[in-house]
Figure (spheres, rainbow over the protein chains, first blue to last red):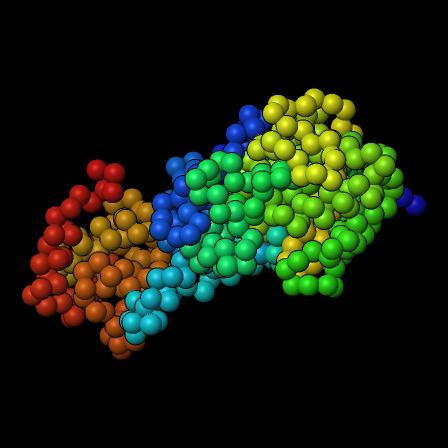
Length: 407
Length: 102
């Protein structure tokens, strides 16, 4: 007996390209990077990032939540509300006990840690906000979404660093296939571009130091790339078993047909030099979708713009595909939103399937010698896309790959 | 009878920090009915200290607690810890427009 198919019936995005899937897609197709000098990082060795527009986010969030929640939760709520609306679901009318929420978060935002630390060191303990703990727990993106929308099924956060969003989508799909819920709100949210996270990544040597040219800093696969650009964002997908979606008359926007998850078991922060863990994740996702590499029409690559990651990923794609299909790097425009990135890019894949279009990769002036991929640049490319692969790789050597197909 | 000066100052702090509509707020307002729970009350007292310099203990036996706490009760509690210099700050605060957008 063939098991149920999982379909995507709604998507929501809050990205530096704008709050909303449509705004984000427009920005991606325009191909203009969102990185710019960030006043919140003024004076630091790396002082630029990709931020979600404040006014749009405030308007989407509404009043009353900011005093007790960190920014990754605001982003998660904006994306979740859009996804649920996009799916034609009305919270309050659904069978709440059967709605699950799984949101990937790499780390708490850390954007409100600094005042707390200052008060600790100055001994002003009474001025430490009682919201310090609940505002920042990584599981609170899922918890606040559940409370906001009235989703009373299984709920939790998952954490695989920069693969968290993709892992959450895969795990949420397993909840559906295991019959633990009928609707799963899945995705990722992160706002790790404050000074503390920024300096931590800078000291690892992971960030681009291209201060003179923030817009040109995220340049996946390019010879001149020197690291990733910190970003924030959230992506949420509504998943259902195909029968459930059909029974309520919902339109399937895509089929989530494969998920591959592996570990490098190699190094805390460096990918395996042969990319063998990444390759196994791709193969596992394709096998689960019952597809061969030749069936894949497009790859939305992890492509962070760090020298080693892009080189290893390109080698993996060369090894798996006889002739790799068109590739794009969403992070060249939106930056690297860490735990959110995998979910943001999965939503972008749904949009690519819908529009039958690959958005361009920005800043690819001269691909590194040896990286011989068909990377879409300059302008969006319209082409037949039945099947798209999205790769995500996190610290800890944790890899998550998704396969999405037209319904 | 709560002191109006302190109620007015609290209203302004609540409007700004909790993003609430000033029209909802008066001395008789029940905090729980406004959606302000015990964490929110503790947070409000942190904000009071932060913005006015009044050191309001969170552990005093007289600290208002429970489902019946009103804005007036919080004002009475804050009043116990004010002095001349912090009163001047309260006057400035209370004189500001109640609506953040005003």
